Image 1: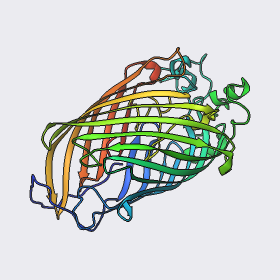
Image 2: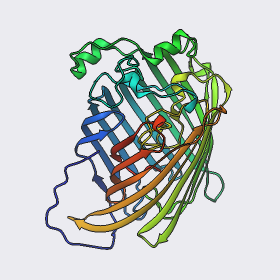
Image 3: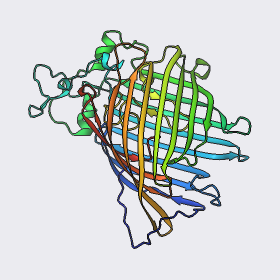
Amino acid sequence: MLFVLVFLPAVLSAQNTEKTGWTVGGVPAISYNSDRGFQYGVVLELYNFGDGSDYPNYQQTIQGEWSRTTGGSGINEIFFDAPNFLWGKIRLTSYAGYRTELLQPFYGFRGYETPYNPAFAVSDPADPDYNANLYKSRFYYAHDRRYWSLRSDLQGALGKGNLRWVAGFNFTGLDAGKPDIDEISSNLSFDDDIPDSSLYETYIQEGIIPSDEAQGGQVNYFKFGAIYDTRDTEANPMSGIWTELLFTTATEILGSDFNYTVATLTHRQYFTLIEDDLSFAYRLGMQSNVAGDMPFFMQPFIMSTYKIREGLGGAKTLRGILLNRVVGESIGWGNFELRWKFYRINIFNQHFYTALNTFFDTGRVLSTGEDSLHHSYGLGLRIAMNQNFIVGIDYGRALDEQDGDSGLYIGLGFLY
């Protein structure tokens, strides 16, 4: 999110001091995301640092968002995380939310095996990609998606080291359909005629998307796995490892319409290059459907013990590449990033730093031999308050025109 910050006279400080009690890190917000459009709304983040003994790590955080975008998206959600919830030993992470996407990006499956042609969705003769003979629909690469989700995870120690177990559950109801032209025209103020066709509809007609998945459904699952975590801090580590192995099992026992199991392995590692100032961080991940049939609408979601992300492609996975460009039953990805904290300041006992980051992202679908690596690179800026509330701007460029051109993303936190 891009926030309006008013800086009053302050004293420059190169040192961080402890924070105690509750602090608020949210304000009215305006943002831009190349995949969703301009966003307006409210984001609120509260952090409780307790007696300050664990600072910059927090005791609890409550994060809420209500927002809308010019691309037809709506977010209504609340997130809670308490690393020392029960007896100081059990971590609780919970989420409740409802999201609407009038234009959910959909570029097919298996990466490069499905060619991307921007001319299919360009109706403006002034656009360099315009081709009257190829134009199909302004919203050819989109479908309608609305879903609610309730989930909760618990984590606890395995022995006395840095290994932890995790177990949780999720209830999700998702509705999918073709782009609703009437609602799109009403909400997004499009006056011209919009052809009513999409890749999503074509896939249904050809049987690529099975009929029992086409309109969405109920997906309820158990989650279990293990975590190895030696990070020095969580919001922006300077050293340590954070590795997760998760198994997500959707089952009719919980009332799910689908039965399948997905395995997700994510490894992150952090290195200090210049003490307190410069670090190198990388993330390697793989997710694969190992049993049953995962419905098409769940394939973009990447499982995690913290926040579930969507990709590959877009703000949280492959920056500069179209959101959900790289989708399949088995995917792999890598992110490599340098982070430099170049300026620190204290304002009314609130601790700020600014940081630059440069990155290289890559990923591919592993369940087909027709795909290859999708690459992007770029630069970013971070403004952090009290180490945890971090406003971020990333600009990424795709290396292959089949993945789009570039993306500008304004949001919260580091990518991993």
